[in-house]
Amino acid sequence: FDITMNQLQLDEELGRGNYGTVKKVLHKPTNVAMAMKEIRLELDEAKLNAIIMELDILHRATAPEIIEFYGAFFIESCVYYCMEYMDAGSLDKLHGAGVPEDVLGRIASSMVKGLKFLKDELQIIHRDVKPTNVLVNRKGQVKLCDFGVSGQLEKSLAKTNIGCQSYMAPERIKGESQNNLGTYTVSSDVWSLGLTMIELALGQYPYPPETYSNVFAQLTAIVHGDPPNLPEDQYSADARDLVSRCLEKRPESRATYNELLEHPFLVADAQREVDMVGWVERAIAHREALAGSSSQASLPSALDEL
Ligand code: ATP
Ligand code: MG
Image (cartoon, rainbow, N blue to C red; front, side, top):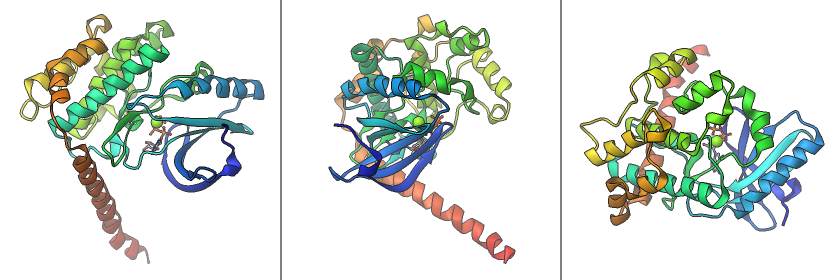
């Protein structure tokens, strides 16, 4: 069935990205909590219709590692996209000072299974693998969102995508500077997966902070520098080897999804119990404590203002 705006009760804002806002909503007819993304696009009705049609293939994207899609519609020049609500949010706000190895293994295997499903079943390359696009719930499930299903939508968003932290593979950066989008392959997502894993382990983006404010320096480091890896003292040789197989600078040398699933680090993950529920609970408590302390810290200065 189709979802319409008047069936939705709008609740709090969950976050904001470069292209729009995500709100928690309640779908009143079914009493299902959803996340609704609003994307403002200056497009004519035909193009907006094309986007809604293309998004429709998401109804076929059902896998445990993929966010469920409920429906999309447009009003004036905004596309609204309704998806499964994930009550622990995205990994960028959950990693704290770094996740333990067993949790990292479970996140990595979920991501690999999700990416492999998209490729094998839907012939989709994700194109935007990064911590904000990996969502978690209190059941301990890890799911991917925001993958590139709609060519029309990608085209309309493309120009504005200048982030301060790039998860783009070297060949993509080079391709873009040559205006050659053909260099993008499925293994570009494998690079982004490796970089995401290091960020989760370190608790911060892996390339040096000096490069955050200097896009050129950052892209140069990615294309010409040595790839980063997990810290040696905290992660096993197997974990480090898997990450280095993702961060091969030549795309042909990178591991495939099948190779990753057969890698000792992910084989070990499949054979052990990981307390994801406990980890999510502690990660949320940590996030909330940080949010509380930062608002307290600003209180004295707020009082000074008075
Ligand atoms: P970018 O604009 O580069 O894609 P982003 O992924 O952070 O960055 P959005 O996709 O607009 O931007 O999402 C904004 C935030 O909303 C996310 O960081 C995430 O924390 C939250 N969010 C998105 N989808 C959901 C969801 N289904 N359930 C819960 N929270 C969500
Ligand atoms: Mg996103």
